[in-house]
Structures are given as C-alpha cells and as structure tokens.
Amino acid sequence: MAEGSSSKLSNIADVEIDPEGRFKYILIKVTDDAHGNVFKYIVRGFSWAGYHADIYDGIEEEIRQMGLKSDCVGGGRIQHDNAESKIFVYGYSMGYGQADHSITVEKLKKAYPHYASITFSNEGY
Image (cartoon, rainbow, N blue to C red; front, side, top):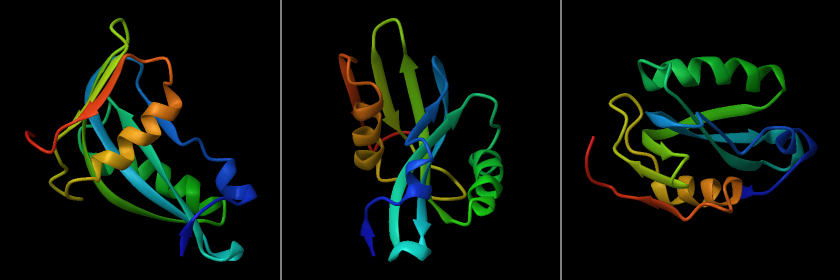
C-alpha cells in the first residue's frame, strides 16, 4: 500500500479545521482499495467536538458512502492562532492514541503555506 491519489481520494480535502482556537483533532488514513490500495492522510479538527470520536463518527460515514475505507490513526489538539499565523499541534487522544504529529504538520503546511509557524510537540495533553 502506498500513499497516492485516486479520483475519489482527490475529492476529499486534506485539512478541515476551525479557523481559530484550541480544539481536538484526529488524523485519518483514507484508503481506496479499488485503485491499488492507495491512501492518503487527512486532518480534521473542530471545537464543537467533546471527544475525538465525535469527529470520526461524522467523517467515517461520509467516507464510507464514497466507497472508501477509513481508519483513525490517532489524535491530539491544535492551537490555531489565525491573527498570528501560527498553528501548534500537541497531545493525544485517550481513545485513538497519539497521532503522528509530523504528518499532521506537513498537511497543515500545505493548507496554510503563508503561515509564519506550524509546529508540534509530543508532550502535553
């Protein structure tokens, strides 16, 4: 299995997060078995989510209806400071474990190329 693209995968945004604040996020691996087991990672984070699973419950159904598979590979928190053009990724999910924040940061850097700082720490909750 390799990270890649298919027409279905390209229809899914890499990053959807709230424009401001501190909130929970998850890293999801989305797989298109119909096209040689290609996959991509997507980041979702929202302040309305009381639990990391709340985010996954919503996106999992949407992905399944597209004929794709998904797996939540971890979570954490995002501190998004839009005014300062800074994003800080840290922490973990009690239910899904800690996401690979380096993957998350790479996705965020592509989504916010004009930001001054997008960093992570494996410390904290």
